[in-house]
Image 1 (tube, helix red, strand yellow):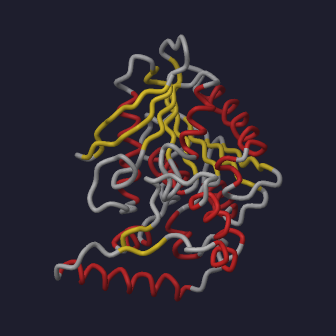
Image 2: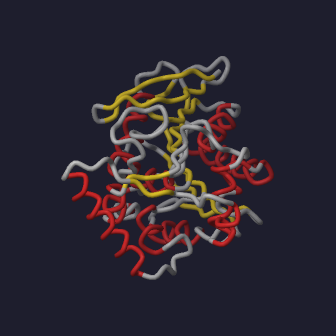
Length: 302
């Protein structure tokens, strides 16, 4: 059963979908974070529903400043707030009678994979962490999705962000930049990763009216100064599962997180899958969910 819920995060009201299995008694629960620019109705909601069907209470929610959640300006991507949102979601689950307070895990998809690692590292209430197509959004902005981006790119982005901050201080409207190409032709010209992101977010495949199509320029310097893996040493001995597509251009970030983590950890590959394939394509989502089910069942066993 899915219900609409609202809970606070640093003074803002976040909108979520809470999935409760039929006949649920206090049991394990999982917070599910959405990809950058995503909303709870897309990949996060799919994984939340699929895991609820396997007996977990799950909570998918919109990050602050995005989707149906509160926060101005809209379309702000603030890593510190995103980490806080995940911790606030855990706090909300702790108020629910359906949830065993000692059996809460976190699942992060794409950018939320990085945020979930950062949140769990400093919040021991999160007993196990899983990620799907994990991205450290700072590394992606600084180094590119493939890790080989010219350093001049982020230098130019930071310059543009500082210009936008100055303009806004002088009375200009909030300054934004587009996240996706306008046409499929432009998307294909950007390479396979750009095209598959465009196809997911900007076509009937998964397009949603509340999914962000731009970010504020003031997001950029917040993102560039973040490091999702900085506190990973604090996660142990709690277990970690990283799931990545074998064909994902971003998989090097899951490898980097795996190498930096201590304790019980596993890097699981989904053969043939790209980064975005794991958002919604059943032939790849199903084995990912099966892996997550086994992982969370074992480590949230009570």
